[in-house]
Length: 146
Image (cartoon, rainbow, N blue to C red; front, side, top):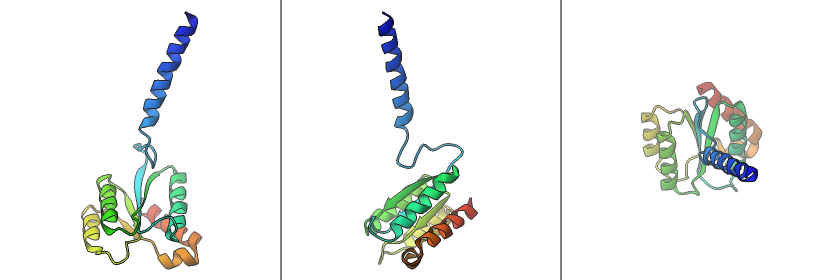
């Protein structure tokens, strides 16, 4: 009898823990204390912007003020537009971006500007020449906005 009560309590605790953790997404659990920063990259993980974006993401998370949605568009302009649209709908406090090459940026800029969300563009050359410096520049720009 005693063992069945203990087993029941363990199952209940396990179910509660699963329910609480189930809400945690890729960029953490949203709370009233954090703001979303979207990072919309034009390509994939083998491009020089990706490690810079990862450093930026970690620095932002370390502040405890932000959660981050880091997305790669795989050089697909329509996909990047959709990713940015989700960031806007999720009320991002800033979007950090490298545009898909050759894409018409005006539609995305219009959408982000209409939502009054600050936009920070990643400098591709700086990602190659000084990735730590570029990550710090981006971090400082986002921090200045928040």
